[in-house]
Structures are given as structure tokens and as C-alpha cells.
Length: 443
Image (tube, rainbow, N blue to C red; front, top):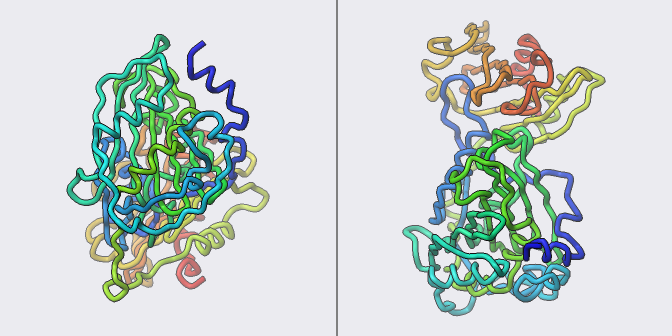
């Protein structure tokens, strides 16, 4: 029996025992999206871009203005042990230990000693099960990086049962933004990640733990498996560890399970050993209130959800609602199969859409008209941009004052998922009525 299996049998209270049923969406829909051809840019594009950046090991923290997605803010502070929900080095006892301290949420009064890339690697190696071998190890310390700090370590771990690529990063989130709008935490909605198995657990002391089983190419349920765990402490530290079955990322096309289980990965991020790394991060930079960007117009996710639901056929069921400012996605099932519906609301889009509200070079069946009040309308029926057999039906409207509403539906619960009904449910006429509803802007 492998060391990891022995470990799993000793864990009395697996970390995924209590799962929040509500998805926590980590990406803010505050980005002023540029516009292109069909299909329009959506929150999925932002999420995929962020995900790709993480997979390419971009350790440097990213800071973008308030109108963009804030990914990771640099900062640090000495954590009380309870922030991790336990003590020690991640043994089964630590997984059972409740938080006993209260994170201060304040930067250390004096700079802690820096942590080198070599020490990051040594710490990660010390938390792996015994009996395996480590190769291709590299690390990044707390004083490395051009703009911000995101120390980390990555390595290849091999046993008689196989091989896994493992990497870990440590960062501190921007204290001025919700944790689920930055960094790596939170579960992505089914419309974006149809094949993920993700859980969210709130730990004693205020920390939040996310565990996910996914794939290197998340639009498919085959190929290399990617498992990852993210711990976000009450005072804004975030520890992320991910593992790829069969070796490093994209090193294998097989479907072997990663060697380390989710409980084992959880014990790594909850280890007390990372406290000195977090303490060594610089204090977060705060933007003075006087220089804050002016508030942009926006349509709240709650309002969009309410208006969209009013247009859905009665008697069906609604599930998997994913809503944020300017965007709502949901799945509607009328008893004949699941159907994803999305509404995207944007402001000041006249210049961005110049020359793009006609049907030139648009794949699929396209119609473009101008209504009596000057509203430009483009209707498109085409195939999914992600391949497969799903159909995407879309109505794109641009009002004379620059307000844009895009409504689309897919004959599945996600664009990359299997088809669940012969054709989209609502039809182009209903999509147009939804897009022209003034309540998206007025409430």
C-alpha cells in the first residue's frame, strides 16, 4: 500500500465533508470587455485567460486598474496559526485540529527574513509522502519578481505507482477586493467548467478551502487530470497547490489519477511551515481614496437574473445561476433537456462595435437590421466556438446611446458539454424580446 493511501485511511474527517452548495465565483465581471465577432466576449473568456496565465506559472502578481480583473495583490503579514485551521506540518492530527488563534490581518511590524527559492523547494519536499523521489525541482523566493511577489515551488514526484507534477504558490490578496474576485480561490460555474468537481468549505477561524478535480484542458472530460487545492486565510493569504497526473502540465495525454489525494494536497497548504513565507511578503499597497477611479455604470447581477427569469417559459426548472455585475448565466430545463441562457449587459460600446454590427465574415446564419428607434440588431445561429455539436443562438443589440445587451442560448448546460436537446429552447424571437427589455437598465 502506498504512503498516500495509508495517509488517507488515517484521516478521520476529510476536508470535503461539508460542501457549500452555492458556487463562489472568483472572477469579477468588472472588465470593460472589448468586442469582436460572434460569439461576443464573455466572462468565460476572462476566466480562461486567467486560468491559462496560472498554468503558465506566472508567479509575478498582476495589478490591473479597478475597471479590470484584479488577479493577485502583493502583501503579507504574520499569521496566527489558527488561520490555517490547525497546527503543525499537515499530519492527520492537523487536519482534525480546529483553529485556535485569531489572525491579526495586519502586516508584520518589521520585515521578516526573506525566503529563498531553494527553501521553498525544501519545504514542499518535506510535506510529500515518504518513499517517492523528487526531480526537476525549481523555486521562486519572496524577493524575486518584477512587480509584486508570488513565491512558489514546482517539482516532479515519482513513486512505483506513477508520476505527478506538483507546484505551489503563496500570495496575499488585495485587501480592497473580495477574495473570490481575485487569486485562485472559488469554484467556477458549470457553464464555464462543466467537468470540474469543486467543493468549498469554510474552516474554523475564517479560512476558506476549495478543492477541485479538473483536467488540464477543462473543456473536455478526458486527457491529463489536474487536481488542485486553494486555501484562503481570514486575513487574505492564499496558498495554492496543483498536481498533474502523469508528470508536468501537458506532459501526458493519459488519464492517470495524480499520486496525491485531495486530503494530502490539503495537508500541504494547511501546513504551519508556510507562515514564514507569508510573513516575508511585503505589505500590501493601498490606493489612496482620492485617486480611485470613478464608479462606472453597471447592471447588477441580481437585477439581470430577475429580468431574465421573467422571460423563461413557466413550468421549467432553473439551476446553476452564475450572476455578477453585467452578466448572468443560468441553466433552464423545460423537461426536454437542459438549455444554457446568458445575458451580457455593457455600456458605452458604440465606438468599440463600429463596423461589427453587420454580418460581414460572421460564421453561421446571420441577420442584421436597424429598428425604428435606431437600435442595431444582429441575430446569429452558429456552432459552438469550442467545437463539438452544440448550437449557439445569439441576439446582439446596440442602442443609440451605446448600451449593449447580448443574449445567447446553447442546447446544453455548457458550451463545451454534450448536447442535451435537439436545438436551443427559447428561439430567436424570444431572445430578441429579452435583449430589448429596458428593465436590465432601469430595474
